[in-house]
Length: 191
Image (cartoon, rainbow, N blue to C red):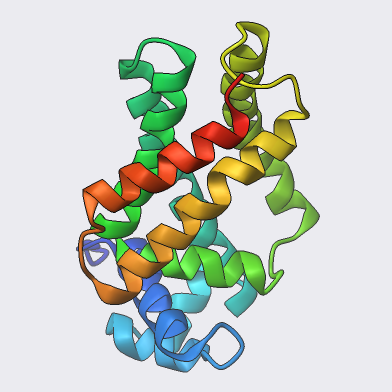
């Protein structure tokens, strides 16, 4: 009789990879260290992933989908373009505060350019969803008639920076300060 599998090995591996990368950086982390942190044999890890880069990309894609899911869920609850955009903006901060290591990991991986063209294709529909919210805001006159990518950059960069600060300090960002930052960003893009 085959031994019954227990636990969430993929989740354990992902959690270990995130902790290792945040602690050491993606180039310094080793498969052995990830396996050790996950409490697994290296061979077990290789049953799930071909190599370290595939593991890191897989973890990144899971996190990216989680952040996107939180953004879209909060946007769906809001009415009006400004409220949807604000909900998405604050969902990013909330994710950073509630999942600090995952948030930092995602920023490190995307900045280390580990992603392949295939990974970027997987992310494209997520970006398209966000872009659609911005395009709707342009069409309904809520934001300036500007390239959606430019508006996304103006709005997302401060949210990511605040998220990084919250994740590194492991403290909830000051809500009043976050509101002030959002208001400044909004003034830059509002019609």
